[in-house]
Length: 201
Image (cartoon, rainbow, N blue to C red):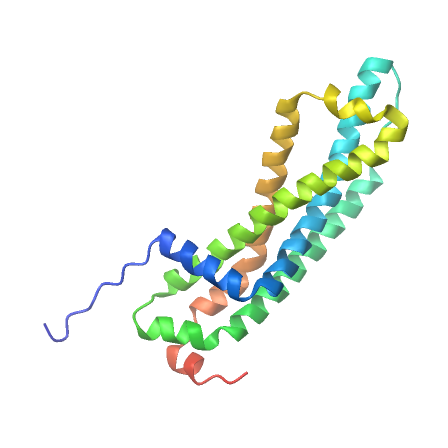
């Protein structure tokens, strides 16, 4: 019937499909975001793991070596820089996709659909950066503490602890990526379709 509003169905699986498609098309920009998250996470992981390796070594050997507390302030700075970098990259991504966003809105996409699309991309990038950063951090921790504690120290740490830190640091990376993407995603969702379609890069 005329005048009847057409319902638009946009599921999370649609957002994941479109997000992966965009990541493939703009792989270099995505790689920069993932690298930013991964480097910050690897710095954090290397400190946590080094501390854990030293604590395990102290338990077995009765020593008192550890990581200096001030180094965690450096991690906090690295995480903040990472968030700022991701926000900047996501804002550029919004500008590059003005026409795409305008087209989606013209065919019925709602604000929440655009928001969901950008947040799904942020989750994918955060998870990838978190996992990569964790393994880089573990390698760095083994190399930095191995000469003091012995390179077999990693086998003395319970596997459940290593897995727990993997999950924890990956979740942290996803949260940082989401926080960094919130403003760009909100901005993209509020774009008027006509303005978006007429935008020239």
